[in-house]
Length: 246
Image 1: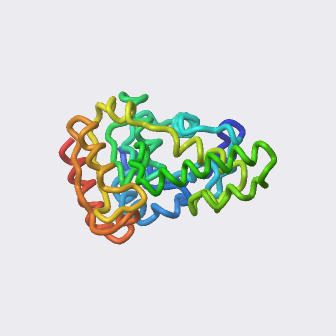
Image 2: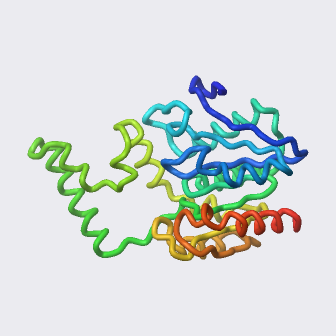
Image 3: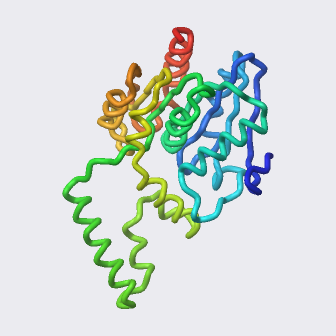
C-alpha cells in the first residue's frame, strides 16, 4: 500500500528485471485483471500492476476526480517507487490514462501498448441519440421536481449502475473526456492490440488511434473487449516483438 494524495493505493510490484513495465486495468477491474500478463512479464521485467483508485484494494477518490487526476496519481506513484523510465500497458480505462502519460511524460515513458483502449468520442447511433434526448428531458423534469431522481438510473450503462454516487460522478467525467488531441500528440513507439468483435470500444476506434498516433502498429485479436484474456500467448508475443524492435 502507498499513500498517494492521502488515498491508500494498492500496487503489485514483482520481478527483478532492469527495465520496468506498468500495467493498468480497465473500468470495474483491478490488478487481478492483468495477473496473467504480469506473471509472464515478471520473468524478464520489473512489473508494476496497480489497483487504480476506486477499484480492487485502493481507496475511492473524491467525486470531483477526473482522468487527468488518475494520470497524476500514477506518476506520483512511480516517483515514490523511484522509477524514471517505464513501458506502459493499458486496457480500456487504463488505456485512457496510458495515453495521457505518454503525452505528458515523453522522456519517461519508453513505449505504449493500448489494448482495446477507451478515450475517443464514440459514434452515436440514432437509437442512442434518441436515448440521450429522452434522458435530457427527464433530467429537466427531475430538476423541476416533477419526477424522482431514481427515474434517471435506467439510462445508465451496466458499469454506471454498479457504482455508488461518488464513483458515478467520476465515471461520467471520465467517459465524457475526449482524448483525441492527446492521442494525436503521442510521439513514442505505440502498439495497438484490439478485439475484432469488441462492442465496448468498437474496431473503428482502433483504426482512428492507428491513424492519430504516428508510426503506431495495429494488430487484431479474435474476440471482444477482453480478447487479451483468451489470447494471452499472442498478446505477449506481440508485445515482446514490439519491444525487441525498439
